[in-house]
Length: 395
Ligand SMILES: C[S@@+](CC[C@H](N)C(=O)[O-])C[C@H]1O[C@@H](n2cnc3c(N)ncnc32)[C@H](O)[C@@H]1O
Image (cartoon, rainbow, N blue to C red; front, side, top):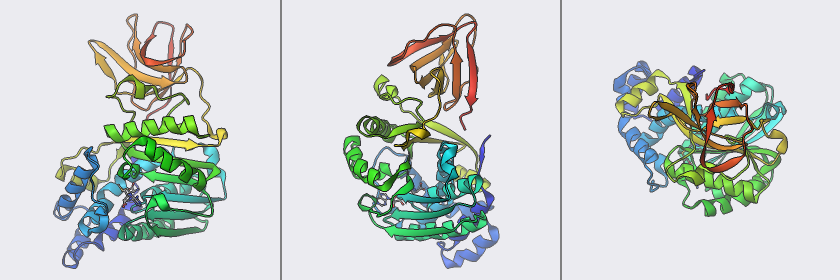
């Protein structure tokens, strides 16, 4: 089912945005709400500039781009809901046992307006509303941290979370952040891509010691990156280094701990997924204004932990669909990745594959043994008598 953006958060975001618009326009915007294109068009130029910076492969973004109110308000109105939906999608991948604690320490690095923390609160309200939480936000932008702090306090109230919620902000470079007490969950949401360290090997080195010190032995590390070619391939390489050199295991999206076969297979491929969501009406209007298609949200992500008890229980015949359907003549194929390898799945003997979506989890019960191979896109043919079962949909 498509994710629905919460209406109570829309209200809170708009209240926050109104504080950033010039006072002469505030009353007009307040009366019009988010329903009028005239008020939304006020945000379009800032939005367009930010959007171009975020979607280009160029990394040269101004260091403190959220300093200016037009950018900050555009971020709150547009990117916050989009990134919230992505964070919620990845939080859904956390094993249920994690949600049984009485207390959580959550660290949001490069927090911006606390996007990941807001999604965390919503997930907590669903799974364990009595738990208490300490949230630490780190960002070098003071204004956006203030927005984040205000939103977290109001949203926790709106969600009727019963445990104590405390929040601290740290205006500083995240790579210099230190804490005496470790965290249950550390989140990098759309921030690694902005690192001045360009290369995955250097980034890995700077993150390894840093993250191990910040996480409890049972802690989770979550990273979301824009699903662009370069940042995603960097993340794929980071994953390989991490699982080769440390005790961390990948809990999601991968079903195995081998080197990433897609990274090897072709320099053009990058492992990313989609979030199906029901965007709020104002996001649809803003997308029209800036000519962006946000009906499905693209993301690349990793969920890691050193605690083996979190590893998902997968069978050798389980596969994750990691491509859109590939049409070769009249044949439809899909790339699938699992414990048994990385395959180009097709159907033979007059059969055709069901419509497989990127991110679907499937079980393939074949009538013959399947050898393990992570070499380049080996063929796996679905034949008469084989069975394909959907375990989980992509969203
Ligand atoms: C694209 S925004 C993402 C914000 C938020 N995590 C989200 O997903 O909506 C990146 C944020 O990271 C912050 N940032 C980037 N590099 C940073 C660094 N080295 N130290 C602290 N903050 C950083 C920026 O100020 C900005 O608020």
